[in-house]
Image (cartoon, rainbow, N blue to C red; front, top):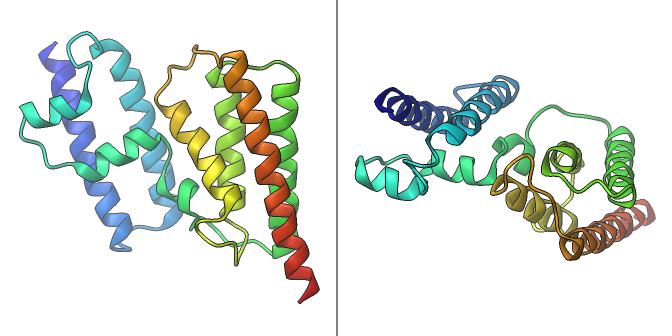
Amino acid sequence: MYDNLADLYSIMVALDHLETAYVRDSITADAYTKACNKLIAQFKTLQETVSDVVPDLEKFMKDYHMTTKAAFVRLKVGVPATVVHGGSGEEKKELAVFHVVQHFITAMDSLKLNMRAVDELHPHISELMESINKVNGLPPEHEAKIKVRTWLVKFSSMKAHDELSEEDARQMSFDLDGAYNAFHRFIQQGNKK
């Protein structure tokens, strides 16, 4: 048990340092994304083992006097900052738009095919968020970004085998449709200029 708690502590500290390095531009976006994904995966694997002892990560941080707020936020979101906010690679606008549309369609089709498990839907939503962030000029608080980010955060609080209820699946479908339409309007407005 103590080894597992020590591992959890070290993952939190390492992730916090990684977040700081990324913010200070001491690490490339690609290296950050790769390392962050690895630490998040390690955390999720370890979380299953220690969930009885550490049901609340905030309490764990308080009990051990940890000041790893950046790591806590990253683990709560469940994906690297480059996925949520962009910053990983540059693409031509046409290619970026193509990828966004492709990922929207894939995510919406997954719901139509009655995929409901987190491990089935999360990769599609994560890829969609990453592709949205590669579209230059899309405001940070654009409806498409907000709605997709909301589902990413929701998935990160669930286990891989958890499934969306029928109501949640319907809401997600509605949100994705609204986000897609908002994104489409943004692209149309850009082409009129």
